[in-house]
Length: 323
Image (cartoon, rainbow, N blue to C red; front, side, top):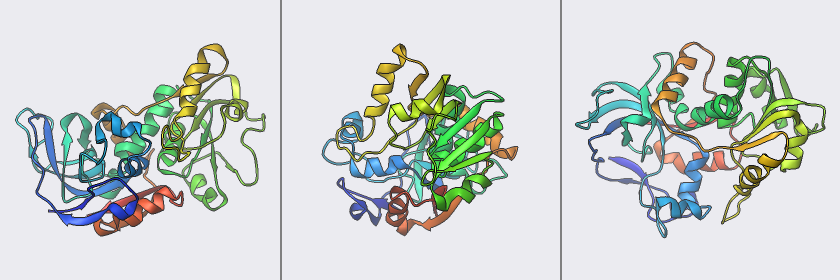
């Protein structure tokens, strides 16, 4: 089968379109004929092997253990393991797998859900990592309730575009922060207010937000705290500094260390990959409360271009790979 492969860590230059065998499946796994795959920030980290703790976490010290990138996917079930009961060949599914930039990929039964009939495969492929992260940031870590004032920093990106919509679905008054060229997009997602960070400071002390969700930003904890009410909650979803050792995760570590001793509450999060929350996202999509914002779909051979576009911060919403 055709797949995007790499045999060592590096930039997008290490990626090649090649031919490999179809993946085998274990008893609790599903093989999916991939129709579309999402491009999320984690793909860049796994491609480069940065920051270094990723390699220690089991992805390969000197070279990637998996030759094929891609985790977010949507497609049709091709085969199921002996212990799989939730899915059968022919089912349309979405979720998180391994090696999604290929004609076929493998996923654990516990990380898939049935694709909403209202979504295309390209739209469904956006939900696996990005929307799942946004849901848990808003609902579980932010504890967003009706009437809350919520600030989403990085509202125009893959996770942010979902966080705006999900916070609105939970009844919040949402303010999105983005650059000038993306103001219209964030407003179209349903944000009540949009701050162009080139013209105004979201941390000018006047916000008094109940929840601040910081996605991939680099604002200091001091600035982010100024945006919050005294009883508010900061949720750090990510941060990119380019550092090889922690790569931006140091802010989250500082937040966890400081939070017991100060107000407001400071949190950092890691996405929990599970089918229960994927089903919840399917429900939000079917009700029309969440619609993936896709800027562009690339063919499989152009995965390097798609990753570069996402990593450069130019993407408006999500970028996907269409097979």
